[in-house]
Image (cartoon, rainbow, N blue to C red; front, side, top):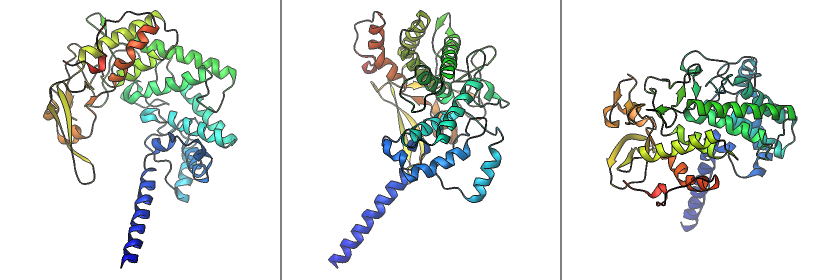
Length: 373
């Protein structure tokens, strides 16, 4: 009996380990960001790389939201080969293209397969080709009709692109693949144009620079609507990554310094320290309800959508009607979207050191992330 129990216990442990290992490969972006460099030289990684190569279109970009590590049937591979000649759904949304380029770089660092290098370089050329003359990037390229043509900061799309281009333009060791000097020069020009676009799209509220919208009109540069529940507004989420990018620039221009100063002041002004999000989960760990609970002196959070004139947070359902509280919209959008973010706390944390480095005076107050209202 004891021996049987031990066998069952061992079996349970092995099963648990197998499930945990399997679960660790559920999310494609997590695989790309594996810290074990040697893994990218394994047969398992090479097998996944074949899928990634198949998903890449000849134009250089990839589609989004694909679990590329999943095994493909012969029929699926045939379909993907046919799609390679098309430009169907090539995008930089949700990390697409930039993350696959990073994967190919990690593969090439371990396995000098020329196809990996070619894939990376095609992806990089895709990013250069997709840039508007004004420095911005659309969500899809070639252009897809609708709000997708707007300059897209949403979900950090343009910031991801610029961070990728920055590494190439500065010839850092972040990527194992080193483009030719001519491409490096193009990268430098693209980065400068992108930063110029960021500076030009920073929203002025009553004459004062504030933050950014999740998307801006590609012609007028004004804040623009996206989906019905994503109205033109100031973003407490996307703006944070934009500012962190600006802060990462060595020897910033006076315009960049002004942009960061004003954005930091806006984050301080709009932080919320009296609310906490409470999530109710079902047995599978899925969110079935969200509630905002009044909690004095809570850790700062920011609304994802804030009124362009008043900074007042607002929320929308799929009917596009603005509401003042999260509780006023339906369960589907309330629970299936990120309405608040703590991303700006990283800006407030890093700002004092950045300001000092750039010769700016800061008031003698306790660290921003610890302030309470």
